[in-house]
Image (cartoon, rainbow, N blue to C red; front, side, top):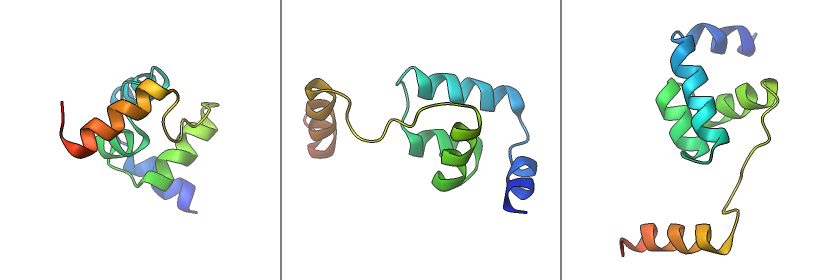
Length: 76
């Protein structure tokens, strides 16, 4: 039931496709992907898994970790 409700929530399929692409490329986070499509983070996880996308949780490299720390500390 929740799946049907979620599918009705994501109205703009082009935006969803673009968002998935940006997520796969590592340009946006899971939270940002959810925000862009108007669903919860957990719904976005389901959408990505159904699309066959491997979830990218946490930094993927030391450079990514450094970037996250800098962003958190606003040191850019």
